[in-house]
Image (cartoon, rainbow, N blue to C red; front, side):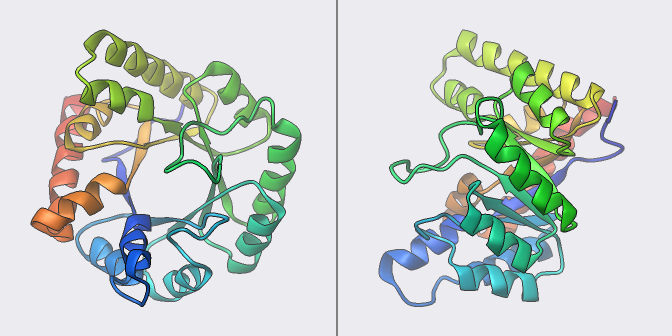
Length: 254
């Protein structure tokens, strides 16, 4: 069983800095600068999603991130020939395979690794053979975990969106149901040797709660941190998030 030997890592997604930049065109605000500030403030890694429609992160952003940052880059990508080719050329530390639809505002659920096994597995294998750590963004579901194990992915990122949305809406019973699914999936995945990451919709409160789970080794958070930084600055938002993670971890350890 793979348990976190220490404080869970914090990965910071800088996509929405690019969203603001692209709203006006031009070069500012610069997502690479945001990544550098995030690392200086304590981020353990940077996540960037190069979507097929290039709605926020652009190809040149990925190249600049690879050249500039001193922490690992987690390259979020759809399972397409184009994105696999870019990943193989770029060689990021990790590639997180995610579902992608042109019509969605943001990722709406986990990757279908069961129904889409025949497409996902060959892409994951090509990335693995190139020395890129493969992560699968999946629902907290036993069948999805089994498929991830079967295809040899070392990491899964559990989709926390449904839980976070229920918490935000004050739907206590529904929130508890989704959290129980996450907890059970984290335990099951770790028993099968998977490294467990979590992400989507997390804020200070939910990050603190989920950091209590012993199997969770990394949280990837973007939209909330970029939104908070408007009011308090990115460094402060990241410091507050790390403090929340530490509080959850302290209860885990104690």
